[in-house]
Image (cartoon, rainbow, N blue to C red; front, side):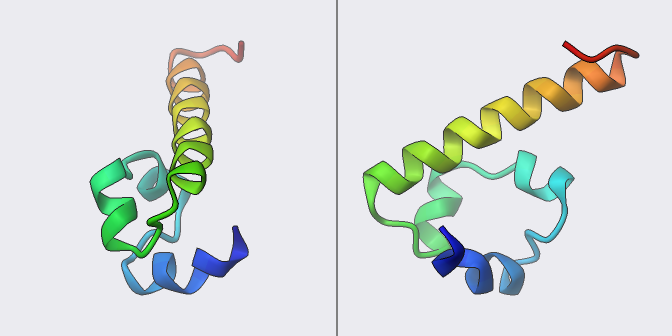
Length: 61
């Protein structure tokens, strides 16, 4: 997935907080057009959101 790193950087997706806000529509705009890659990234985004939510509540799951 490193092939998308430059696109993410140019678009300002350079922190975990920014990555957690990415949507499928934004992935397409960033050049991630392969559905399999979108699913992998969005699965990671979903896991990141869950971890960030748990951390903000004061515990890790």
